[in-house]
Image (cartoon, rainbow, N blue to C red; front, top):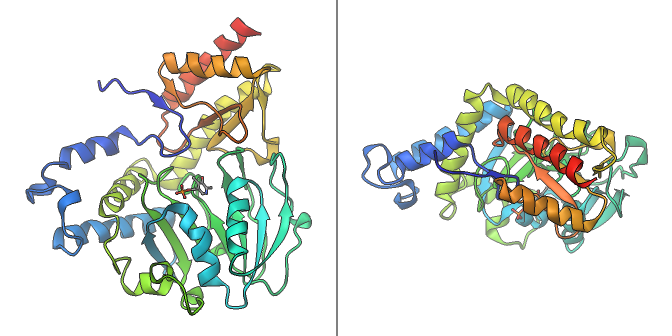
Length: 359
Ligand SMILES: *Cc1c(COP(=O)(O)O)cnc(C)c1O
């Protein structure tokens, strides 16, 4: 009806049509207010209702316990690379498990502020998630940092590391809300919203209450978690529209059956593509089997020329942004929550045809 493509971009990425239709329905006149959400005061009654509903729905969908705070910030996931060491390290010691580019960047940023120990680095090819016995964790670290899903390389934690009493901090930018997780296992979880939770310009942070308020003395006020909590994410004007979209996405997830249903659907989708990789010597998967991401499927073809041809022909057939990240090349299909099964089936059929014609 709208002539839309299947968008396999890693982020910003596809939104569900349900959410887009809801936005378009409300765009000029939100529920009789005579204005759009974009034009509303963040302190208005109507907006505060949207805000509270968003928080409540995401809390319910992710089953976030009461001893956690939800904070909305701006500056993307990358801002949290700095905010986390500034807020959570009273002893200025943090352990980082490096499984890809974003964890590496986060560790580099943290090292400006605290003593960083690289507990493990599975590079340079980043095909896998390390095992517990490979981790060199310190007993006196303030937190242990992981990147739950490595968007660029296509690997994902299946089981999270055991860090005992030391808070586990996770960047879940690219797999948040894709499956059920036990929030109580984490000290802090965060995500940039443009992959699985809506649109760019909003970061979503869940932090355990007892970890708040131990930040260093001199730091940018907007990065202080306690300031954000005390002002209910409205110390300054928040990204009102992105919070509204997050609320719609959370309601959409709920409507589809919550995170259990999402997980089932995502497993099914990923399996279709991984089955092709497993039954082909034309397509070569990047990630080790036990570390594969359910969200970003990465693979190579026999030559770079064939990869370019693959991307171009797929685009002609209405499948966009299949080119791998510029730092690693190859092909990457990002198949977040909003990618429909039909999009996966279309890609799978294309892959089979392309292999037959080009092998
Ligand atoms: C996209 C992404 C980031 C960077 O997000 P920004 O919002 O652009 O800062 C960080 N971590 C992961 C895992 C990502 O997928």
